[in-house]
Image (cartoon, rainbow, N blue to C red; front, side, top):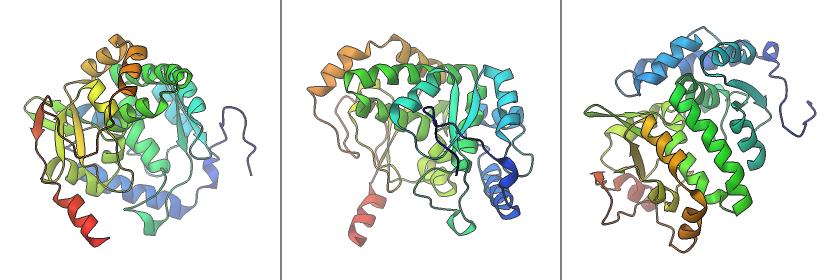
Length: 280
């Protein structure tokens, strides 16, 4: 067992992956690569090429970091699983993306309770080759350190959830996916764009940080950013201290709530969520 240091970084130990592990990655990669064109933001597909992720097998983090460092100054480091918030933010602020090194079993292709190397690397890392998105991720890490000191991590976590994990983006007249939780999931890659169930609401910083989210099913609301440039600008321009104070005095919003001031792109039927509730 690897000893865990204060930064939680451990060796990836790439040589320990089995043929089954590599085959699982290849199967997951092939089916997502086949369905994402036309659905995912073009910068993601460009990132796959820059990082040469189409090479068979689980990527070697050292090789991946060399290419990523050349592109935007980021690197990928292995960790044993989910890390404490302060450690996570510190790594992001220093342009280090933490990734789990284990991969799901072949019978877990469509559902996994905790992120694995496919979600972390395939889902997150390609967009770190985009200079603007890379800057946003660093800014988020720096903001996380401040949020921790203000007791506002739960509010900032919602921003990460609804952008980095489950964000949608305008691309001309179309809406594309960019959140890692969507791009690494075959079923949610379809649901997020095509299903009539979820609300799709134009991104608003305060609105997002008031909104609860769910971790056990598809999202009932997705927020749509105009561009990575706009997302970065809003993050850098905002004075988060007063925002956190304002949010403390406001009610949290349920996942399916629509407000009068929302710029609503799609009013969802919530059929999927109601059907799930009825089955329980």
